[in-house]
Picture 1: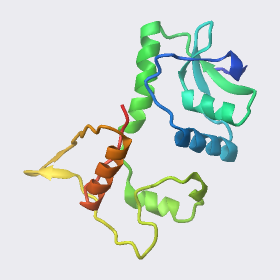
Picture 2 (picture 1 turned 180 degrees about the vertical axis):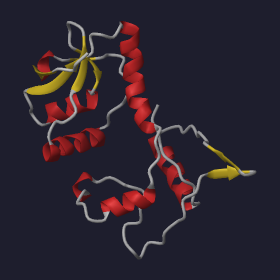
Picture 3 (picture 1 turned 180 degrees about the horizontal axis):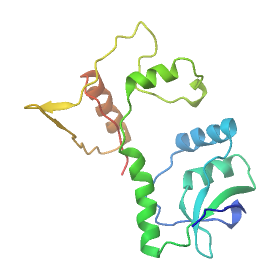
Picture 4 (picture 1 turned 90 degrees about the horizontal axis):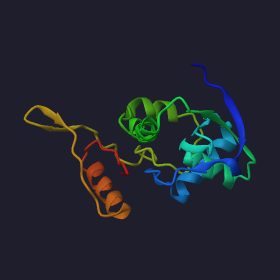
Length: 175
């Protein structure tokens, strides 16, 4: 099966009412800046006669924020309803599974200008900031992934900062 890109009016796209991914204003702003800087290079996945958004809700919100009339879309009509729902969740969750290689990230970021995105890469901001050694959680010679449930995003940020200060490599995820 070949994917075909269609340009569809944003007003003819229907966000899935049970989309499990949240998009805060900051997230949409970052996506919008990326679209402005690099173009709309990741089509929105849609399904069915109502052009229901399967994946790409944040891109749709950013496109509307930018005043775009049409956006690139790919049809996912080959999926059953159950597959569509599964794919929507897996598409987002799979991107969260990979960890950053902070040494390579630091090297890549060293001569790039991404300041206008306002993102925290987890790296020291200047040479005066002490470098904290990042290491996985290790107990009795075994490495572990630990999940900590937080009451809200404020508690999540506080916990993330505490773990980073302790030198524990971590990432956040919103369920």
